[in-house]
Image: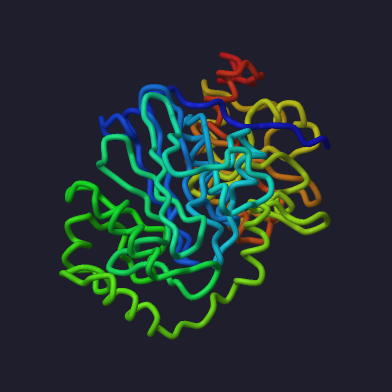
Length: 385
């Protein structure tokens, strides 16, 4: 059974504009609970071009699913610095979409296709991110500032009520103080600040808040106060330092022979996970391989035999009866679950996975998508009806 692309067609930009809530820029904040890392997806609602900031290797499939569902053409995957606490997903995203890999030139990392320095501008559609060099946590720390100064993505340089540590990887407290005060806190008070990490649920701050409430450099604290604070901190090194830093100096590319996220993909079919986490296959691939699959229709008998018809050769097991009738599904063959639109079959797919079936996927778009793409439908004759 050959594995070929089965990606759903990108959605039109009007849906992207609607997802942006009428704003010209869509912004999605994503989270990796294991490392406390925030990933940011920005897209221009007019053109559909977008950028991804600080992706996490293990969250690649989630991020790619959202990009595809919203129909975003990814221009670049950007890292605010060479992280020491998680492995970036930039190389995987480059492989999947062809986007540029952006990282500070100062990091001297391999596989970077767009080395960045302060003053660079990253264009996506009609919008831009300004690159500001904010070293001090590391030599290669960058802050990405939206063109209208309404938002800044500060990586680890400035966190909510905190900042990045300065005790390893070329860290320097004096340098970081100047970076924050001269490159970030000089932005308008209303500018929203989106951090690279948080561990207690704080998602966003503002310039005005950090000027007043940041315990390390707000409320009138000067450079001397900040330096003494940072040099007095006693923090353990990040638990994944030995793994993450070398990988990030390759932009997340696995070593030869090393298992990566792509290796976790099923070998039996080009299964893609939706943003909701559901394994799915497109109608074209299913139609090409239908003889090697069990197509399980979980609608009612009335629907199956009624005017809507069914995919020829599919097996009917209505959703309410599925748990009790799982034993009727032929063993040893992958299962693709079908319903009218892909809704009931989504629940059935999850039930089958819970029951231990590993080669199972939902038919993306259901019978509606199948028929819309011109694949055969078997319907009862009027006399039989």
